[in-house]
Image (cartoon, rainbow, N blue to C red; front, side):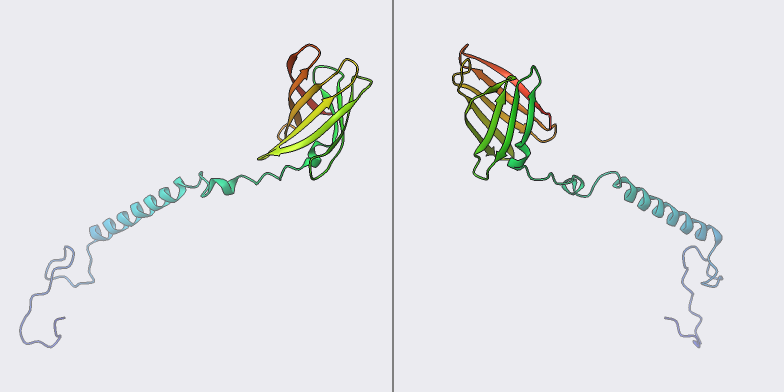
Length: 171
């Protein structure tokens, strides 16, 4: 710092384009204009940078709501096969997978075995029929929670053929 009461005449430093005869607070208008322009450009760049990320979620997993857990109770109900009058009536499923299932075409057909199972998030339903015209016929189905449908394969033991099938919830 230059002392105010100096007997020597020290040259004053030149500040941002000031001539040596100008006072330091007399900043030229072109300098002030350039500072304002630079500030405006910086603010604009910052605004664009902030807004460019607005259309993307910070965490994609946080954006999607968690799907409710799939439970055996979602299998309970009356299901109608999409290609006919065949009906599965799942009245209950216990925690260990034992299922009470009725099968109708349109009359009752004996269900010898019915079990529900889980493979990761998939619910599966196995139904074995044992009746006249249905000896050892089997449904192996999966539940689709997005469409609320059962789909899978039907094995017609009398003909030795497999058929792709789907059931929709009737109630």
